[in-house]
Length: 177
Image (tube, rainbow, N blue to C red; front, top):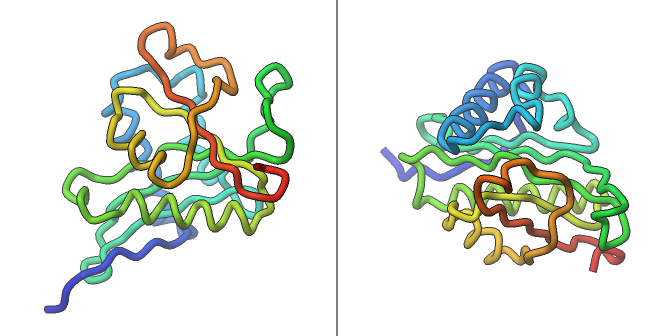
């Protein structure tokens, strides 16, 4: 049997969407915070929803031999409110990057992020934003290693009253610098 590799592909089939929903739910369960302010339950129930192409994307990572789902991530357009907007142009948001524990150490998260960046550039976005809990140190480290820089918050986040949140941005296009 050969060595397996990680394949990153769009989540397009009903089976894929079930896998993404499971990954998103596992991600949320592991956070231990209430995501109801983000309408999380409706988001998962309505996939692909705001993540639908041509302005969004849902990606899954699968093992090339077993076809086992290793992780997932979403990309959606975001309209940053004027009081938070510090850079011009169209922005998208990275949501719910999740890699199953047994798949960690295989660069799954990095591969998902890189493909998401490629898609966002192809869709014409000027910048990519995200937020993550400060305690998720490996995620923060991954994003920073891929060129994301810390920014001020870009939306109201009720989680901040309970624990620190890190906001990051990656410039994508000519006006996104």
